[in-house]
Structure formats: C-alpha cells, structure tokens
Length: 404
Ligand code: FAD
Image 1: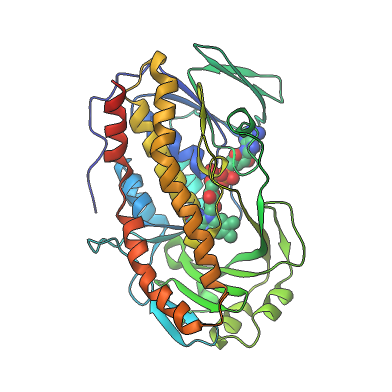
Image 2 (image 1 turned 180 degrees about the horizontal axis):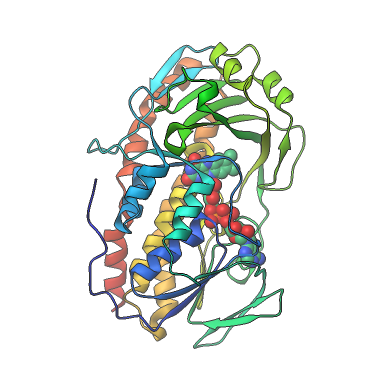
C-alpha cells in the first residue's frame, strides 16, 4: 500500500472557509481533501440524512491513489472488494473477448468494487463532527469581491470565501457559472442492484465481469468485501426518464432483457428480488466551471456516461486538485485559483467524457464487425492504463506554484 500522505506544513490558508453544496461522493471527498490541506469546510446537503441507493461504484487506481493520500486506503480495503486477475469481457453468449485491465502501468492493483453507501459512510466518518449539515436545500447564490453567499430553502444563508457546487447533474448552482445546457439522453437505462453472495456461492468474488450484446450489456463486480454481488444491466429505453432518476424496476422485465444470454447471467438474475432503473444522461463538456468565488465539482461540472466507470473517480480527482491549489491561495487569489483548477481539470475530464461515450458504443456492439470491436476492447487496456496512471497532484502543485 502506498504511503505518500499529504505533506505537512500546508497551513497557510487556515482562515479560508469553503462552503460545499452537496454531500454526495464528490462533495464529501472534497471536504476531506480541503480539511487535510488546512482549509475550514462546511458541507450542506439537501437530504434529511446522508445516504445512497443500493448499488455499486467501481474505484480505480487514479482515485484510490488520492483516497490513500488522505489516509482512507485501509477503509477502502476493509469495505471494498478488490478486483483482480480473471476479470474478463465476454460476448453475450459467454465467448471470451479480452481480460479487463485491473492495474496501472506499474502493476499496482487498486481497483475496488464498493457499495455506494459504504463509500459515502467512510467519507463522512472521516470528517470532523459538525462539518455536514443535512436538510439544507440550496436555492440561491450571490457574491461580491471579497465573499460569497449561499441561500437555503429553510431561510438560512451562509457566507464564505469559496463556494463549491457539488450538487450533482441537476446542479442548482451551475447556472451561475455556465450558460444553460440540456442533458443529453443516451437512450438507455441501467438496471442496478445487489445479490447476496451467499445465494450464489460459486460466483467469483474477486472479478469484474462484463458481457456485451446488441444494444445491451451486463456487468457484475463484488462489493462489501465480496459479501454482495453488484450487477448492472444496460438496456435500450422505451422513453425518456427524468435524468439520473432512480426508480424501482421490474425484475421480470430485467430477466427477459437478458434471456438467451450466457446461462451465468440467468442464474444470477434468478436471485434478483428488487432492482432500480437509472436513466443514462450526460452533457456536452462545459466551457467553464468557475466564476469568481464559485466553482463546480463532480457531476455538477461533468456528468458522464458510466461506460468508463469514472464519474465518481473523476470527482475524487477534482477534489484533490482543488484542495492542492487552494492550499496555496490567499483570499484575494481565490478567483485565480479557481480558474487554475478549472484549467487543470477541463481537458482531462472532457477526454474521459468522450471516452465514456465511445466505450458505450463498443459495449452495445454498435457495429457489424464484432471482430474489430473485440480488437478495440483488447487494445483499450492501454487507454485504461494511462487513465489509471494519472496522479492529479503534481500538476495541481505546479498550477498552484504558478499562482504565486
Ligand atoms: P451526486 O452523487 O449526484 O451528489 C450530489 C449531492 O448533492 C446529492 O447528495 C444531492 O442530494 C445533493 N444536492 C443536489 N442539489 C442540492 C441542493 N440544491 N442543495 C443541497 N444539496 C443538493 N462512477 C464511477 O466512478 N464508477 C462507477 O462504477 C460508476 N458507476 C455508475 C453506474 C451508473 C449506472 C451511473 C448512472 C453512474 C455511475 N457512476 C460511476 C457515476 C457516479 O455515480 C457519479 O459520477 C458520482 O456519484 C457523482 O458524485 P457527485 O457527488 O458529483 O454527485
């Protein structure tokens, strides 16, 4: 396990206060990173309690590297399920296509399936008491030269030096930064849920497995130390659902969507009693994320399709980049620091957004030449290695140094 923690002595900005709107994976990781870099932080979440739907999220080395820097690596190991050799892509009938890349270029295997609620819990548990304020729905924002103010539906308003909008794909604060844009419906939905491993004990608990068919694909990986199997069935949608809307799905419809596929999928789906349907949307990359003392992070900045499994991983990279840059900024330099953060992140994230769209076409077999598609899947391991090798910190430090 790596041990390159936050360097000591970065306390120049202990007086800067950051308001984070949104207590999802992005907002909670950013809070941890900013506090570790000496800033003071409050998180405001609209829900009455922190929580997440019963589904999995896949963590990859580019974000696990940052979780380890904050001392959260052992929690990830405890609550996650490491995925390793034997992870594989298959055609819909089970014919093998290619192994799945599970390490960075150095061979470091830090790919973990996590229950989303476990990740939210471990991020929240690492914060000082009184950092997170639930039951606060942000409804407005205003700023002057020296401070910014966030307004809430319950009548409260708070002033701070910096506001981070980590309020997801429906972001309320996004309109203060970027021109209005419409989410792009991908024409598909994801059925998601969890099956206890005890009901399917022959299922490997250390593998990421994906089957690719026409207009559909099916993914499983373990979570919670291998006790649960997370499954996601991506299928064409009969009509638009509200973006990112998670609604109950019909397990029998899910089973019909994948009938005739590899019998292993049928065996798993027989165990499904409840499932969620999640409509897939992204947006065109934004031209800007920051305006004065306000900046965007995570899905508020870059909602993306899940076909590279990078939405949460990129939000973690965002949080570490932001904290590393703000650690060197004083109150006057905040707007310039937020522009530096935006500059650093925009192109990397836009590449990942585009890559997720392209990968979705491969996964849904949107070609008549499946041999070529299979060759692309095999070659894609090199893209994944580059993605996983990335460490956002050195570039963020250089961007911070350029500010001074
Ligand atoms: P969110 O998780 O949406 O959190 C936003 C928070 O802000 C919420 O708690 C919300 O209640 C709160 N909020 C919203 N509005 C307000 C307001 N006005 N005031 C106060 N609070 C507010 N990513 C991966 O990295 N790996 C994966 O394997 C993966 N799998 C996925 C599978 C599917 C099917 C889908 C759809 C997505 C997947 N993702 C994955 C993407 C990932 O889930 C998201 O990118 C990530 O959760 C975004 O985190 P966030 O904190 O930016 O936003």
